[in-house]
Image 1: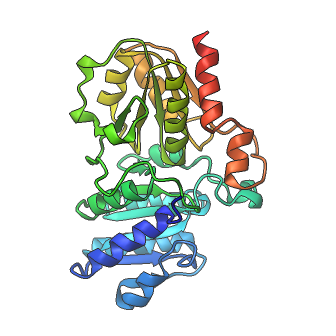
Image 2: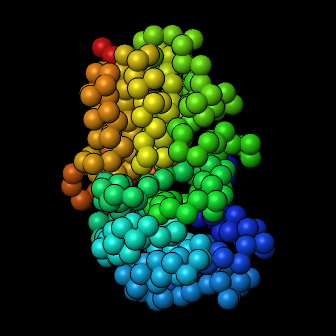
Length: 327
């Protein structure tokens, strides 16, 4: 069982890359502990900035440093980063086209018992609505590391959401990764996973069930795929870590082979992955799309897995949804 959260994977990459790149700067809003960035602050104090609990200042300072040539990585709880500093993300980061990576830590319902004030169930839709802002939800620590390395070679605004707790490994250290391409997991077998551009779509059978998931929902989707395969229902999973830009080519290629598409996300039911997939499929390749998400209501309090179980955002719930809609 993996015990390394995705936030630590980010710190590990930044620590390694900062050895040869003095332009990397990390900024936190009194959150270096919860962001797992304390080791970076200790190793590179001259490349670290603590703003205190002042998210708006955090984002504006990050944008200013980026305009001075720095590669700014800005860490704050996703619930606050995506709301309190929304104007700064829109204007100072995206509109000003600054090299800032906003990292929303403890995303989704990671804070569990702290309730709606600390949940970030709207951040995908909010950030994706900002022109020039990209949105990423990596599925495990290996994919997280690949994503951060890619963003270090990039100079465009981005929002990355990671959870608080470790998630089960999906891939290995040789994670199949191409920037801004979904990962295709045929037959719910991660060992056969490939970036979407490397997938031989023509040789897939027709009538598949496609599960499209992002972030912490990818592993349950893979487990659901295995349950369905055991019942003779052939599945394909799209790990859509790049929610924006959505890998439209992969969605449409999968839709062409599918009898049913089910999306799964740790987000409100509006404006997130399910909405984007439904809009894309409806316009270009009409197929039935079922979206699994958190409810349009204050989410129950409890540890993440208990909340997921309650709303059917687990392997059994996803598989049950597929079975019901195939009847």
